[in-house]
Amino acid sequence: MLRAFLSKPYPYLGGLKKDLLRNAGIGAFVALFLIVFKPFQIEFWQTDHKTLKLIGFGFVSFLIPSLAGFVMDCAPAKLKDSWTIGREMLLMLIVLLAIATGNFAYGIMLNIMPPVIGAWLFAISSTFLIGVFPVGLHVIRKHNQLLRINLEQSLILNSELRQQHRAATETIAAPTSRENSSDHIVLKAENEKDEVQISATDLLFIESADNYATLVSLVNGKKKKELIRSSLKRIEGQLKHPDIIRCHRAYIINLSKIKNVEGNAAGYKLYFNDCEDIVPVSRSYVQSLGEKLKQRG
Image 1: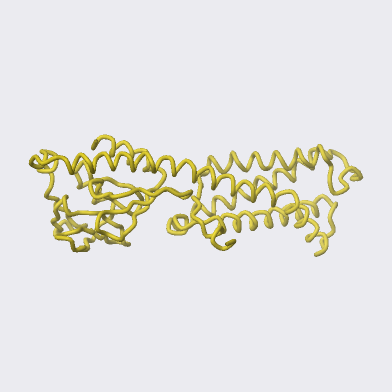
Image 2 (image 1 turned 60 degrees about the horizontal axis):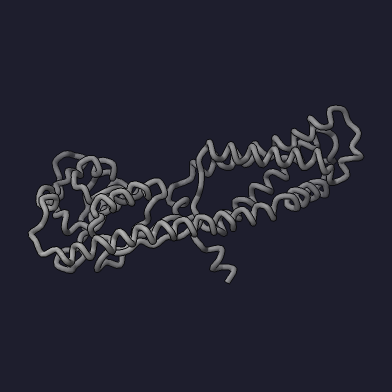
């Protein structure tokens, strides 16, 4: 049960500005906590500029998670896309350990901590005592909040899809001019010589695969894959069909082929008609996806 909970998807909410603001709040909390409550026998600490030195512990608590956030922002996108509650909590615990070590080193500089293992363990236990419960509660609260928001949004998107499916079923007229005008798609490779031709009515999605892109289509009920040497950004620039849009750093999808949208704390997943593949939706593309679905209606 615990393993299942820790394996639940969790969005990696990076971003330098957000990290700096959040970490500034953490640092201010630590400094204020030490100044006001004076735990760990701080009231017996006799030194000049005591308040300023206590603020230094808050600065360490700001600096170290900011550096950790910078390192994580440079991590592979694939790792961030597969982020979970367990990984988020593990990262937070590692950051707490680093903060404790930083505060230990700072304490040695101020001559209030001896450079021995016992003092380091004391710094770790003190830091975890202050931070571990707020960290755990923050992760759980954020997960539940995002899960609620994404579930509500997925219900709205699915409602749009159902309306469009009903309208498509009830319409017996000939294909619209939108379908006829740009049904035939020609995509050129990086070398400007090779090309792939595909029908927009058959295309399900396009997936980035290193230096290639995989075009996945459904032709006469059978799934078909074609490779083209090109970046997804380059392909996106060649596409003019209103229903074929970007939904993720690694995916372009055909809106007309979406069967269902599923929401979880990490974002959204798209399911297609007569296809077992599942495509994720990045949070930055959710709004544009919803607007495009409404336009189709």
